[in-house]
Image 1 (cartoon, rainbow, N blue to C red):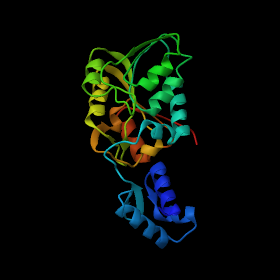
Image 2: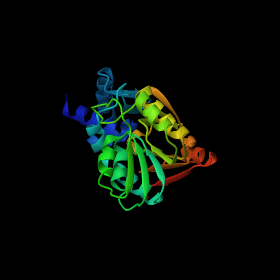
Image 3: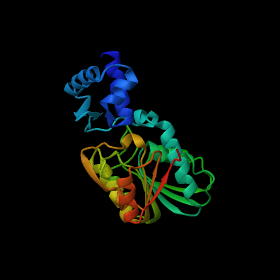
Length: 252
């Protein structure tokens, strides 16, 4: 692939929705040249075009855990730090799947007396180093690529317990605050977590903004607290506050 087109694909998959003029400025070429590049990339199914913008192609399968872990790694680390400062010791917590939840797990060491229930094996491995954490892990079939337990096994696991707080993430969020994920199994497990807990926290990094995925996973305003590494639009902030939620985000 042409080096510039490869770079455009990587940039758009990292940033999300991007204007053609921004790409022209970044690569020091004309908008017409960028338009040609984007048209070719769209024909190859690598990006989507939309009225002077380009956005990531909504693949039916999420990228691998190792790829997600390094994508916006600094932003995810900051989200984990922010969420950990909000939590207190001696709470019962559901932790969902994903690389951002693993970043949070790495920050929980100072908290005492936690009871954590999770289907995220990356988080579980980190929490094994936390000597004052009562850790319960979902059993069942492991999704080897991502090292987690989803589907019916995770659903039944979370239905057996009740927690003070459920902390989860999603695969994507569009500009109207609709949340998405890549398969029904992940959605089922998340819904069980939310049903069996009193307070709901969403961790979402900016690489998931203005995107979508095949499965609907609720709305932003269903959460009591949203933690992110970049400002939400004024529209989304208004929706969240109108629903009684709070926003915790990295300061510019």
